Image 1 (tube, rainbow, N blue to C red):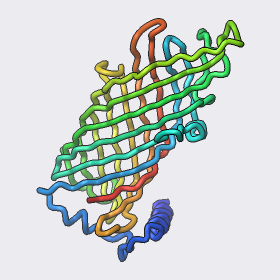
Image 2 (spheres, rainbow, N blue to C red; image 1 turned 180 degrees about the horizontal axis):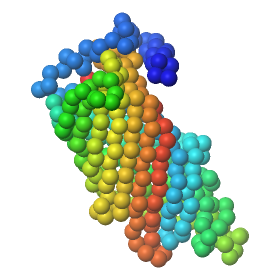
Image 3 (cartoon, helix red, strand yellow; image 1 turned 90 degrees about the vertical axis):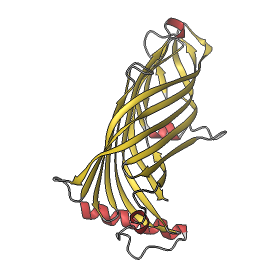
Length: 289
């Protein structure tokens, strides 16, 4: 299985690098000279662009109207709002010795999604529900390597980072639907801009499986009633060196990400609630500076 994964990843790497028109490294599995050349006393930088293919499940309330959220990727991608920036996802980290500073951005805007949410029993919006939905999640934080050495379970060396930071959420939701007591009357309710920040703490494991290969697992928990009641995230990726572009190592990676949050504010007709789990595969590429 591992050899099949290696062969597949290298084939993808070869096609990507040839398409980019860059000079390939002599051996895609060779050591990464630009990483090794960075002294521990100097800053290094990585920049990642990625795509997250999400399933969303849970429930939300907009202006006191309860809604069920049960969305698959086709319902997300089929309703991206192309009149503006439909989506953006990126990750950046600067590192010097055991210290790292990172930033992660997830943005998506949906327009007229009929499959995004449906009214729950007890609400007055019962049919033909469609949603315009904008979400931005901006994460900022730091990492500190607390342990490094040989992994007794997996091959290669392992480092464990303690991570901490904040996760800023922005949401803006418009829900339109016909009224339960009068199907000929349509009503639109708007959440307006809803913003909050969740502090979080967690751990990250980085395991070098071999030259140019890394397994990364991260888990964090936050909220603590400061912003949301609770929030948690799990991310696992397999990373491999694809090629060298103009002297900089380019990695590819595949993995899985799950992010959950339980937030609420207001009461009655002003209540806004968002209790949703977003999860699915992630695919991206990382450039090392």
